[in-house]
Length: 156
Image 1 (tube, rainbow, N blue to C red):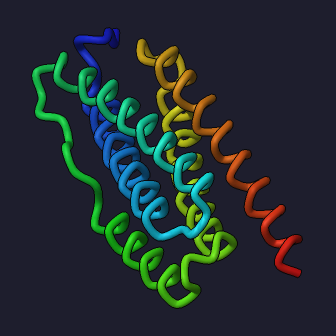
Image 2 (image 1 turned 135 degrees about the vertical axis):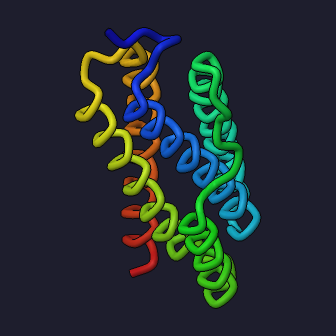
């Protein structure tokens, strides 16, 4: 029986993946904040980055409780996505619609990662934490989607 201090290898591996994607997400939102010309969106992106940092720390604590080293950096794929965000922002001179388009790609990825984990480890002792984090992920995902759509309508 799985407990918070005795998680299965499968659960620990999934948590490591979520840690990495939260780290990637926080870094991506910080870079988006630096790349975007809209000060209000830049502040919002910084707020989301802090939330993603908190998610990563919570998950890292769960891994460490199991006497394991927790991931402390993002993935190569996340680095590539941030490079693309930088390039796109540079080409579009910090255009909010272009930056939000890249933010949405990252939001889709983190949403899918949480959905997959929640499905794979249903009933896990970490479910309350994961469900709370997922609710925050969904709220941000929906907010970014709405902002992207509104910016697209303004641009037309």
